[in-house]
Length: 618
Image (tube, rainbow, N blue to C red):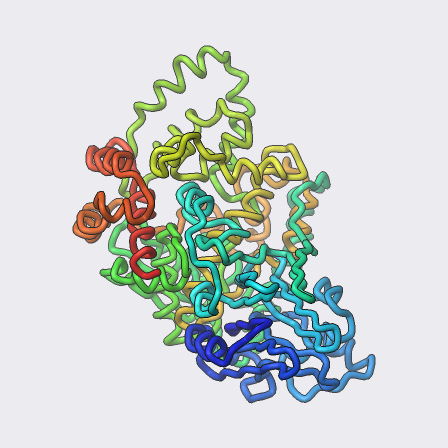
C-alpha cells in the first residue's frame, strides 16, 4: 500500500513535497524518478506488505527500460499472473506484485487491467510513445486525483493535499461541487471542491499524450440480472466466491486482522478467516471491535459472541472520549469537505488497530452488494403504497407525516417513516435521492443564494441506471456513488492516515458481477440481505444472522448537545458561514429547529462544521 504522485512537467520541489505529504501512506520507503528527456517525474512512498525487502521499491523501471510504474494497492491474483508470465519467458527479480503488474502492462498494455483482481491506482509511463496511462480500480477502493495544467501538462496524486503542492493548479472553489457536497455530504466523482482538481472515476483509464487527455471506462457494475435459482442454490453458488475473496485477501507478509462489528458482513468475513487460519495451521485470527459508552451504538456483546464462536483473539478498542478533537486531521485526510462523521470512528479505530496489525479485512460494501439498506425495502414498498388513492396520500398522509418527531439518540425508525411518506409520492429517482441526500434542492438554493434550485445529483445517476426495476436501480446507483464517494473514501483516507491497509472481500468485482446476475426478487426474497444471510447460515449461529441491523455511526446528536455544543457556537456564525459562501438565515433556522428537538439535523450541522474546518485549513 502506497502513495503515488507525478507530473509531466515535474520539478524536484513537487516530487519532494508530494513524498512528504504522502508519508503516512507509505512510511517504510520512498523513491522518485525523472525522465531526463522530457521532464516527467514520479514520486512514491511505500508501506511494505508483500515482499518486505527492496524488491518492490518504486518507481519501478522495466528490464527493457521503456516502461516506468508507480502503483498503490494490491493485486490479489499476482501469483497466478506471474506463473503465466514466466511461462511466456519473463523472469522476476522480486516476489512483489508490483513487478508482476509492470510486466503484465508491458506485454498487454491497458488491456491487461481486465486480468487484475484487487484494488489499485497506478501510473505507467511509456518512454517510447511518450504516453502516460493512469488507472483506478473497478469499484474505486483506491483514490487517484489529477489536474490539467497550462501548456497541456498533467499532474496526479493519491490525495488532494499532495496535488495541491504542484504549482499552477487552480484551487478556486467549484460552486457546483459545493452544492453537491451539501446534498451528499461528499463531493461525487469526477469533481472535487477545487476547480482545477478532478477525481479519476472508478473503473476508468486516463491517457495523456502530446498534451491531450482522454478518458475511457473499462468496467462498471451491472445490476440487471434475471437468473432465479432457489435461495439455497444461490447461496451454494456464492459461498465459494465469498470464501475465495476472503482467502485471497489474507495474503500478506505482515500481521493481519479483521474489524468485527457483530453485524453479518464482518462476521461472515471473520468466520471464513478463522476457517482458513485453522486450515493453514496458523494462529487464531485477530479481531477488533470499537466500543461506545452510549448503549444504542455499542456492539461489543454481539462482536464478542462471534469472536468466541470462531475462536478469534479478540480486542475491544474504546472510542476516544474526544473524537471531535480529530476534526482538523480528518479534514486534512480528505483534502476537501467530507461530512460523514463515521470517518472519525474509522480514524480512531485505525490508529488503535495499527498498534497490533498492518492489514485489516473489513465488511464495507456488503449493504450495496447484498441489498442491506432500509431504503431498498422502502423503494419496493413505495410501489405498493402508490396504489392508495392519490388524494389520500397527498392531502392526508403526507401532511400528517410532517408531524412525526425524530430522535437524535440513535433511534431512526420515526425519521425513516417520515422520509418514506414524504418521498414515496415522487418519481422513483426523486424519491430515492430524497432519502440519501441531506440538504434538499430548496435548502441549497437558499444556502447558496441561487435564483433556482439545483438538481439532485443522485437522481441523475439513478436515471442513468441500465435497469428500471427499483431494486436494480437503487443498488446500481449506490455502487457508483455512495460506495466509492462515501464509504470507500473514508475507509482509505482514515486508515491510511495511520499506515493501515484495509481490504474489502465483499466488493471483489467477481462477486459483484455474480450477484448482479440474480433476479431482484431473489436478492430481496425474504428481506434485506437475504442472500448473504443464506451464505452465513453455513458459517454462523442463527442468533448472529437474525440480529437486527445496526450501523457503525457515532452518536452525533448526543455530541451536539455535549462535546460539540461549544464548537457549534464558536464556529457556526454569520461571519464563518459567509466566508464559506453560505447565507446565514437558513443556517439560523436549521440551528433553531435542532434546538427545538422536532427534527434531527445533526448531520447537516456537522457538515457545516466540516465546511468551516476545511476553509480554515485550505
